[in-house]
Image (cartoon, rainbow, N blue to C red; front, side, top):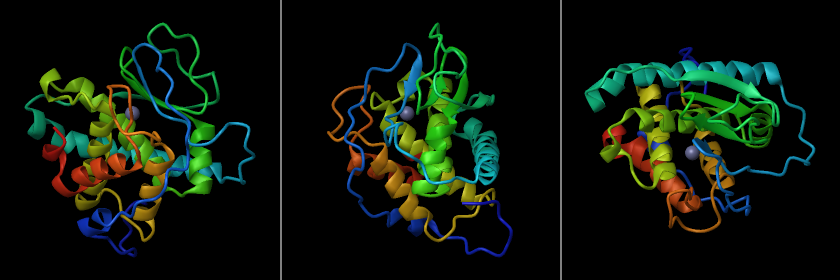
Length: 238
Ligand SMILES: [Zn+2]
C-alpha cells in the first residue's frame, strides 16, 4: 500500500474479497495478555535472524498507515456511532521490553503490537514490524496498525456494539478501514497487497478456532472477518 500518486492501479473491493487462504505460519498459542492490553500473537520467534530491512521506508509506511487510518476514522466514526471521534495516542515503535508502560505493567511485551486501553495508545515492537515487513511486505504494517486502531475504536463504542470476539471484530474493522481508506483516496492498494494481507492474517492467527474472548481466531476466521469488513464496511463489523 502507499500514498495515492495517480500512477498506481487502484484495486476495487474485489481485490480484498478474493483473498486466498494461506496455511497458518505460526503455531504458537496466544498467552494471556497483560491487564488492560490487547496483545497479538508473535508471528515468528525473536531469535530468528531477520533479512535486512529498510527501516526508513518502513517508518514512512508506518506514518502513512497511521495518517490514513486516523483520517478514515475522523471521517466515518461519528457517522457510524453517533459519537464524536478522538484519535488515540500513537506511542509508536519500541524495542523489546522498552515500550510504554500500560495499566501498571512496567514492561512491554517483546515482539508484539498493542492497544493499551488505560493509556489509550497504540504501540508496536519495531522488530515485529520489521519481521513482517521483510518477510511478507508493506501491507503487514498497514494491517497491524489498522487492527490495533480497531481496538481503540472498540474502546470508543458503546459496549453493546463491541463483539465478544473482539479480535475478530478488530480484523473486521481493519478490513473496513483499509478498504475504506482506499475508497476515500487516502491510500492506494497495490498489486500483491491482498496476498500480503492474507499471509499476515495467517501469520498472526491462532492454530485453533475461536472459543473465548482472548482468542484471535484461526487463519480462516481472521481472513473471513477481514473480508466482511472490506466488503461491508464498518456497519458490517458493529
Ligand atoms: Zn488484537
